[in-house]
Image (tube, rainbow, N blue to C red; front, side):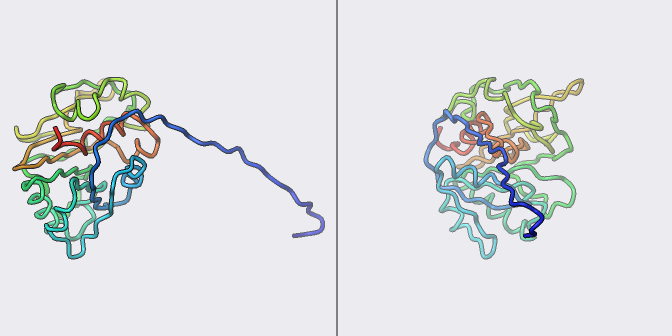
Amino acid sequence: MYDHIPEQRWFPKSELQLVHLNLNTVPKKIGYLMGAGDLVDQHLKILKYDIKQISTKDLTLKELKNFDVVITGVRFFNVEEKAPYISNLLLRYVNQGGNLVVQYNTSYRLKTKDFHPYPLQISRDRVTQEDAQVTFLNNSHPVMNFPNKLTKDDFNNWVQERGLYFPNAWSKEYQPIFSWNDFNEKPKKGSLLIAKYGKGYYTYTGISFFRQLPAGVSGAYKLLVNIISLNND
């Protein structure tokens, strides 16, 4: 403090975002494998899920089977040094009845390429227009209907983009759910691919949940809740 500088008080404008989430949830115990860093697990806690970050140190199949759902954070297979070992555990977890959700990875500098049960090819495909029109490819799929019925309105008011690094080729076991594209580009169908594997579900998605959930996008919450709820259909 200086005598020639009078005391001043500054009251910056405060803003609080409130979002009405009109959705149904099914209680789940979720394990989250953090990748390069995101806040998806923190925002799922808002929905009262029992969610825990999983350490990859000494991870076992028995520990994974304590969870109804396991989610890998963005670029997990790009940054996790133990990815070859972990991916084997994860696929065994799915085969024995687990629900695995893999968020986007890049094809560059993967620690392992063997983290999916059937062939798929990651590309640089993305949809950068947040209001790109969505086409539903499989209205009867459980992810479109349970525990929430998805409509076109759920894809309004998204932020920054639809998603990134979508696969552009995959085997017949995967079911593509959406198609969308940037202006004057060809439709891209690889943003959400879901396959049954053994007794469980495997989901690969490039949809940018890591952007939408912190922004309070209600439709993105609804979609991720439905993915998490697979195995209850």
